[in-house]
Image (cartoon, rainbow, N blue to C red; front, top):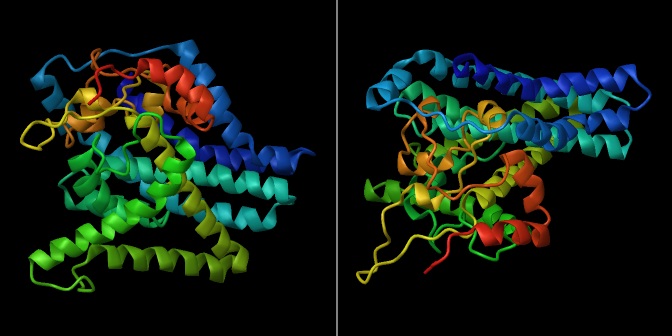
Length: 352
């Protein structure tokens, strides 16, 4: 079932055309613009709880190997690239053409931003961890489509090195508010991405502005996307691209908050942190949302085995467990008092 269940990821971009159909065939265009958010943050959590959890794992190492060698799963992620690029262009056209008031325009913009966070950044997250050149390229294009190419560098060389330590701006300390966390992360993580790439080039004896700085190329592609939408749809098109990009990046950082809140790696007497394990990320094992997110919610195993492909990720009962899928936790994180009331008692005791 899972082999074809991952096709559900394409339901998410389809929400925008459905919202446009509602806007043009009903008298409630503004409400229709918010429908994708209603689906993702109300209907999906309800369906998650109704369908339930999935604790099924690959049978053994050979089963993991078999799953990882099946290229069907690889091509599903690659297919998200043309879908994402086409959706952004079409969505910008609808943003200009549909009869929205400012309320509807805001709903349309945020709907696209969250969907770009899923289809762009989430899928790119899977791709940038892989060695194949095509997957690296596809991941970079997806991140460029939301103006967050620094994630390609910072996430792999920064976050995965320093996760669950004070050095990581993508790991929220116990008691932190999601709002202040996201505001800091949106500045600190891109800066750190550029710093890490500059350090890599410096080690090669090259300046940061050298053509081998991949962030220069991805930034140029982001600029090209923005300019193209500006030419096609005017200033509104360029503004739409910029704001959906910012919203997508903010959505990512909310998920980062959810994934690592309050978890910490112990520091030994030698000053070194313990090895990252499945105890240093929150796990969520709801079947439906995991299928729609390429099993991003099995995040605990991802941090223990960063190159493992999504279809082979393992559920760990011993990992910290979230009480819902990411869509439910996203909403909860935006209400800090409620988040702390529900999640703080679940944070493992004995933190350093």
